[in-house]
Image 1 (cartoon, rainbow, N blue to C red):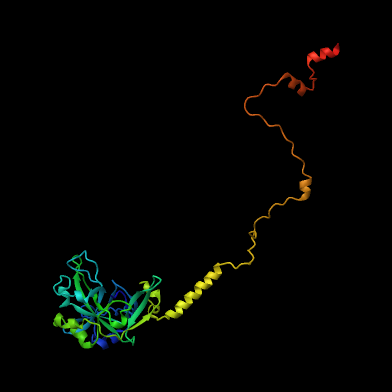
Image 2 (cartoon, rainbow, N blue to C red; image 1 turned 135 degrees about the vertical axis):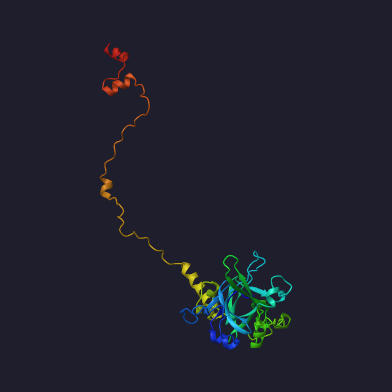
Length: 326
C-alpha cells in the first residue's frame, strides 16, 4: 500500500519527464499569487487529505492540477475515504470504479514513498523507497474523481493511488506497493480517456526490481513533521549500537555501586538549628512538684478522723483518752 510519500521536485522536473508543461486552465497555478517556488508543494511528508499536484489529460494534452488525496464515493456517502485502489479490484463493472477506470485516470508524481517494517521489538521502522537516482521521479498510476458540493456548487478533485503486488526486491518490506508507470508513453496512455482500460491494464504489474529502500528516522512517523530529516537515511547498525550503549550507561547510572558512601543529609539553608539541652540544664533542673489529682464529678465524704488530721488535732479516740486519764 501507499499511505505516505514525498515530493521535492520542481514543476520543471515534472514537465521534463511527463510533458505536462502547464497547469489546468480552469485551475490556475497555485504557486502564483506571490508565492516563492516550491512554497506549497515541496513536502517531505505527504499524507491523506492533503492537496498535491497530479498529472491529468485535458483536451489532448497533459496538464497539472491540484487534487485532494482520498476519494469518497459520490453514491455511497457513508463509505470510508479511499486512498489506495487495488489493481485487482479495478473492475469496470463495480459501481465505484466504473466511471473512473475508463475516463478518470491520472498520474501522481513523487520522489519516493514510505513504508513501515514491523521489527522484533514490536516497533515500526520506517523506510523510504525511491529510484537509485533519487532526483528521478516516480509516476504512480491513480484514479481521480470530480465531485460537486450541492450546497455551494464548489467542485473538488480527489485521487486514489493504484497499488499492486510488490516487486521481488522489496517484498520483505511490504507485500503491496504503488503501481509505477515506467515510460512517458505509458503515462500518456494511462491518462488518455480515449484509450480503453483493457489496453492499459497491462501496465498493472511491477516487474521492475530497481527501486532502492533506505531506513529513515522515526521522525517521519508523525505526520506533522515536514523537514528534510524525514528523508535523511540512517545507519541502523550504528543506531542499534548507540541505543545499546545508552541502555548500559543508564543502567550503571541508576544502580549504586557497593561500598559507595551514602549521601549525608544536610539541613536546608535558612532553617533554624535544632534545640540542644546542656548537661548543666539537666543537673540543675528542679524536680517538678506533684500536685494531687483533682477528682472529677461529685465530692467524696470525708471521715471525722481525716478531718482532725488535716486540722492538726490529735487523732486519739475518746475511749483510749479516758483510760489514760485513770
